[in-house]
Length: 248
Image 1: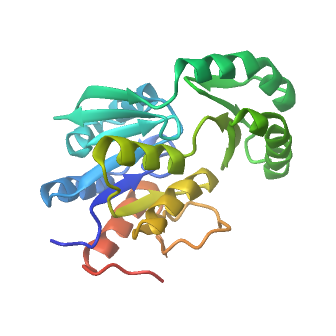
Image 2: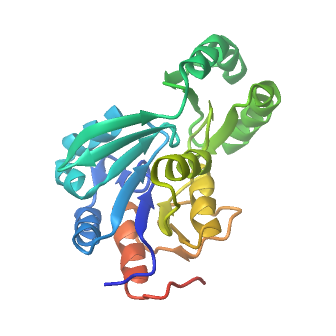
């Protein structure tokens, strides 16, 4: 079936994986995409071990059979899969940048005022549901870290800094390692998925948000009524039935 897009690019936390579970509908949706010849990529701010652990804990490792790559750390690292196994990892962040982020970590923690975490070239802090505090911290982080070329990103329950956004990483990966940018159906839930949505729409694709996502200051093309994995399946079904693509 010609669905009007070449690849599905889906966020993980809050989109595929939500409240400790993965809906079977999303596994089935990815299986059909795979069998119909379209690629599937998971694009997340987390690390690859987090994704693999969540899939194992939820009994959803079958999904890996239908995923072509996992882009982690906001698409700073690309892990290619074949038959469910990681076969190659491409790192877009240099050791020098990683060292810089490690050097800046104490200042990041001071601004956040609490226990933070790091993964590779990124740092993060969980703010919970206090959106006002999250946005206040994000403003201070931008003033402090933008001169270093680091990007401040927010998501539903946290804030962080990273060398790249999902837009930057995807654009560089496809341009440098594949030679062309595919038409994508981008799926996500939160503010940190806006660069992913933007990447898809600027290259002729579509942006779909799952039902549990909060309202964004961004025009997604389709918002599902179903939450998380079931919402992913709903969005994919919507676009699979519209070969020429569709935007609200």
